[in-house]
Image (cartoon, rainbow, N blue to C red):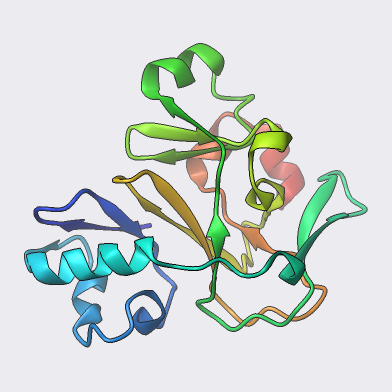
Amino acid sequence: MLCVWLSAAPALTIPRGLGAAAALAPGLGAAGVFFMKRRRATNERLAAELREHLLSLTPVSSDTVSVEDTGTIKGRGLYARAALEPNTYLFDFTGELLEEEAYRERYPDGVDADYVVCVGKQYIDAADEGSSGVARFMNHARRQPNCVCFTMDDPPRAMMYTQEQVEVGDELVWDYGEGYWRDRPSQAELEE
C-alpha cells in the first residue's frame, strides 16, 4: 500500500498497482506527483482538486454487478455482468461508521470483523447486509486481485476500483491485506 499525504488536506491512501493516474483525476496533468513513494505532496490546489474529483465520482450502475454463490467455502461473491476497463470506479464500501472505541468493543480480538474496512482511525462496518452496499460481497484474492480499495479520511470513504480488465462473469476480488489475515492463519492457508 502506498500512502500519500496531502498537505492541508486529510489523508488519502492510494495503493500501488493502479497504473493510470488519469482514472483518478483526469485533467490534473501532474497526477504523477500523487504516486511518489512516501513523499509529501505540498500543492494544496492539486490536493483540493483531487479530493473534489473523488467526491464527485459516480458508481457503476447496479445492473453491472450481481451477487451470486461462488460454489466455494467463500459463500457468495460479487460478479461482473458487464466488461469493466482497468481503473474503473465501482462504488464505495459502505456500512456503519465506527470510531476506534466502538470498533474495539464490538470486535475485541478483530477476528470476527469480516466486513470491516479501516479508514484512518475510523472503521466502516458492513456486517449488516441490509444497511451496507454490494462491496461487502467482494471476496479476497491474495495472488491475483482484480480490484483495489482506496481510502480517504475526510470524509471517511473506502472506494473500490478495478485494477485490470474485468470480463463478464469474472468475480470482483481484492486483497484484504496482511492485517486481516494476521489473526486468521488457518483461514489464510485456505485462501492460498
